[in-house]
Image (cartoon, rainbow, N blue to C red):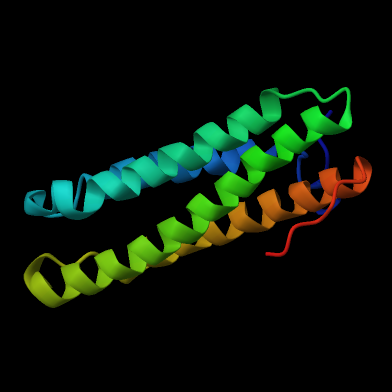
Length: 144
């Protein structure tokens, strides 16, 4: 029996799916960049997206039984947040370079918007999970 669309909630594991989708989208879109940017721009974008996915997978693989283990899980999420911020910054730089130097090979605005949407969604999910874990395990919140 399926759930009506208006009653569907966000899955607690959505942060994993979104991180995976972000990495796949990044790899697909970086393949469309001019090849001369491979080592200058696209490699960094792919590495950051891969790091985000690896960190959320690592965080999800930690099953805390004490405060120290829960802090390890939160630390992976903190690293994922840092990488998301860096990816957003590097995308802004990539957009500026590609649009300035390759006007004839410009990447469509919808591609940049979808990238930003995925980053924003993942950032919200990871930050919410991090705050939830900090509250659950009485960890000291770190300034963001």
